[in-house]
Image (cartoon, helix red, strand yellow):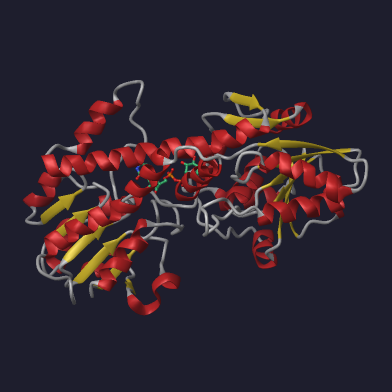
Length: 431
Ligand code: UDX
């Protein structure tokens, strides 16, 4: 099929590269001309394992092209996929649909076909696909029949290419024509396909992210119970996760979830419930526990720092919201560093690919390697569980640090082992 993807940010770009890899002819469109120029040269604007190889390969075999701005060439394609951003609205947590609306207008102004399939892939509130259909009628002014679909993505950053090609399921919402088009697009991917209406498809996305976020917040509050009772959260989640009705995934205690999805989508579904005057208490709890989890971590820093952090030299390992990405959106590291700076601490940070220069400028030091970051420091904080930290030579760290104190916000180390090296060691929900 010939597929026109509008918005080549995270979701749109991975979708474009993978659909081309599946054999489709794909055009990726974006308003950001600089990004498009970079993409035309096969350069990926985001750090995502395996993506740049796919871009280069499919640019070369001409299955993938990039353009700036929507134009009449859209009529050379069988379907369009809208993958533009839906940022969170500050004032009420609802998703901002400005870019989706603008894209719908643009598409309807250029399409001059008997019928055309348009699929929403951006994460949107329930009912957005129907609003899009109504705006097409309004702006198109011809007899074009638009078939609207909803095909929310379930990619994890750092795993996106693999997740796209090996999904647990594919969500296909829309009328008959849109469903057929989507089944055709994903014909080569063997997995369950949930075929439904657009509202249910949109809800599946928000509900999935809420359920996953809830599992993490439940684990984090349980880890605090472990902290005050002396139980071990890793043993607890092992025991709980073996119950087939619960399952082991997404029960890693830590400093809280971040990223561009969980924080935004939990607030988005909460705003929908509030709008309809429903009970929002469960949504509120999941959000509050997550926001408080970095404070619970900072309590451990205060506890280990003793009297004051003033002028305390602190090493921070990990800035990205999770490993294998350079993304720092809603990263717990930012809240934690903000608090430590307020308490007068000096921060030496290291992350393999991410940085927070825009957020903190020269207020913190970005070190060239993880060992440099620990030089003469009093406390080492683990904030993102990159493999390089898991494999770190703690004997080398021991020789560098001023005092041997580690607070592990991601439970990457074995407490006994680290303590046997002479470190004072605290982690999340483990004695
Ligand atoms: C998520 C969903 O997983 C994905 O399906 C959806 O399409 C987009 O949102 P992503 O945000 O990339 O993907 O990251 P994910 O791997 O889900 O992690 C989200 C956050 O939860 C990270 O901050 C991670 O550190 C945290 N997390 C995850 C935990 O704290 N504990 C866990 O057990 C799992």
